[in-house]
Image (tube, rainbow, N blue to C red; front, side, top):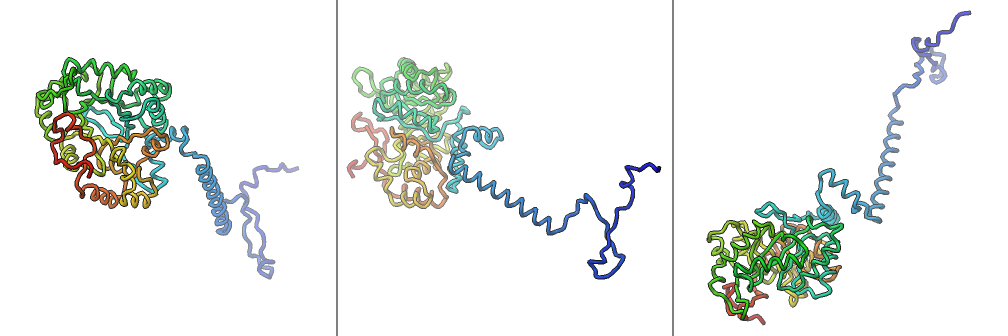
Amino acid sequence: MEKKNVYRSQFQPAPRRKLGGALGDDSDYTLPIRRGSPYRSPTRTTRQLIKHFVRFTVIAMCIFLLDRVTGLRRSNWYAVWIRGKGTVKTDQEWNAGYDSLELGLDSLPLSFKLPSGDEIPTVALGTWKAPPAKVGAAVKAALETGYRHIDGAWIYGNEAEIGNALKEVEHHIPRGSLFLTSKLWNTFHNPEDVEAALDETLSKLQTDYLDLYLMHWPIAQNADDHTVDMELSENPVRTWKKMEEMVRKGKVRNIGVSNFNIRRLQNLTSSDIEIWPAINQVELNYWNPQPELLTWSKKNNILLEAYSPFGGSDMVGKTLKLPVVQRIAKKLKITPAQAIVSWHVQRGTVVLPKSVDAGRISENYHIFALPSELFDELESAATSHRPHRLTDPSARWGVDIFEDEKEDQNS
């Protein structure tokens, strides 16, 4: 018996089948039977492509619906994964990008770089006039929202409560991720008083250092009777040099001023100083936009911070109801407050909105790049009217602090 060759089929020609029946005759016209051939008819290939497309579309729609219902893309694990890809670096950057994407708007910078190399967050929680027993909750609400910049001052009288709030959340929001600001009050301008005042602030905030320490006003007052020391007020270089010493000691990372006009800044920076002022915190809002100070500060590498960005507690309602603000907010589907805060950051300033309401704190944090034509419209409206300064203790202290044109504050 002949032994069967099990490999024969691999070397023999493929069997052929007749197509006579199909052609209507007994023709010998044949085609090979191609078993396992990769060839597919165009019709079958098209069907498979359609099948894969439908399958992909269904999966994409399911993911989209899941995201809309659960906020999948906002989840921590997804944000961490995206950060690992190098797209964003922090949860704050991720949330800002997500919110902007939702509205079809560009996002604004979440920080500016200081001359020291430190990054200062563009939106901070202001704590001026924050009532006792409420400021601590406001700080915690702000930190949970995403804020990392808290602005305070010795004179506000609430640093101890802020320090307690920071201590309560340090297990998941470490000190190193925060940017803390405080200010040197007028009665501590004498060089021998600066370090003791700073140490008191550090003790109340329960921290070893401040990220930013500001000279609160360009006014030095005697501690005993609160009379103005005109010489030290006009030439604050001795106070400034003591603040520079605090930087060298590691108690402060950056130093700056507050409520200085251009002349006072020129006077300070023309003196024999080693550290250039990083910040000038001033009143900036729709009613008092100070475009000249903003332009000069940018040219001289001094970053402005905007306190009372809505115009102070007496003007908030009027500011948010301005037709130009309402029109921009409606067009971009954001709130009037978000339009104002975004405008400040887009001008190139750090902004310090203050509130003790958790909802408003969250609202103020979410900023968006205004389209250029809308930004220009708001900037033009703010700078075309006569400026109205809302905070000016010149009369009370007997010193013309801002040296600008005075007006009837009731107008």
